[in-house]
Image (cartoon, rainbow, N blue to C red; front, side, top):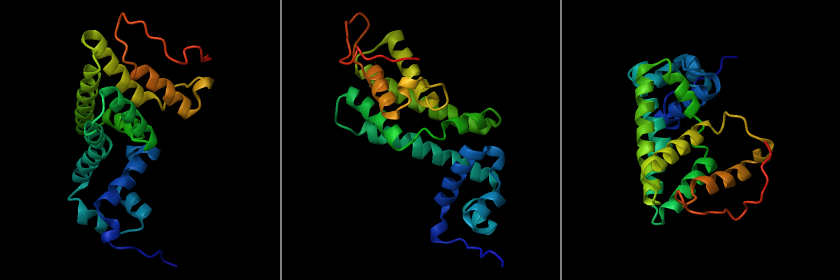
Length: 206
């Protein structure tokens, strides 16, 4: 029996294609971002694709814009609107990223960027916006100079790499890992201050 094809309609608007493409990119790599595969996965015809995208290049650009808007611009807008001290905004940003897995496509896009200049350009722009926003939060907390730059860089590197690097046994629990990360990055202590975390006696075995 032939599989019924579902034509373009309200159910299969542009964001449905883009969300499906993100999952394929993360799970199978950019080489699998083929129109026929995506159409088959969604159960629609390729005509639905061309209803929303002029070409594959147009699709790639809209996919990049969708990732940037949904996983970076959204965070900046939501966290930036909070009327709380900068330290609390840093904490809430970290929790939001973990809670909604907003970093889950970062590695896939960076891998793709190594092969495609247009993707690399978008990733650079996203990184620049993230850096500017996070730097402003740490600056508001009182950090400056080399300490400000390193803390910002370390925070962004942690957010991108935390899902792919080795995690010691004591930090395998995501909630425990987040607690330690919060204590490290949201610690308002400045160089020269004597700051002892409340749970400084806890052991972390590598």
